[in-house]
Image 1 (cartoon, rainbow, N blue to C red):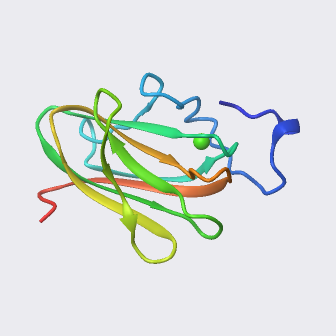
Image 2: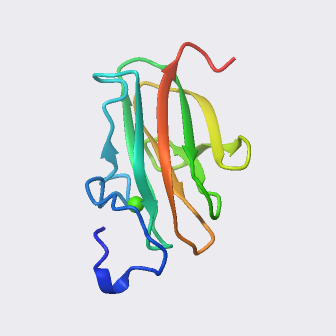
Amino acid sequence: MHVPLGDAPTNACADDSVFEPNQTLGTAWPTPVGASVDSIAIAGLAICPASDTDHFRVTLSTPRSLVAIASWDSGVPVKLSILDSTGSSIGDAIAMGMHATRICLALPAGSSYPIVQTGNNTTNNYRLELALVASCN
Ligand SMILES: [Ca+2]
């Protein structure tokens, strides 16, 4: 969703309109991970407005393990989860230090959806890293 200037909160939200709208599974931003690359790092993302939830899609031709890390410079933590193709959560990231949260999960072939939100009615900017790895062990 592109937020009109008049509705923007007072802190500066990064402009991630190139990835928006991505509020739903159906509008999830299709990452190249699993297709043309094994990893990607995206900066300049924002949970903004506070009700924002960002969906990203990873589509695999064979089962792979995925590391997903969301990180931020200051402010409230963001929450990172991975949804399956039906929209059910299959894993939640856990804190990695004060300014990042991480999950490694074995994914099936097909589409899975890393999602990011704050979940506490606040905004924040963040970065997202996704990387296919040999194993989570
Ligand atoms: Ca966003």
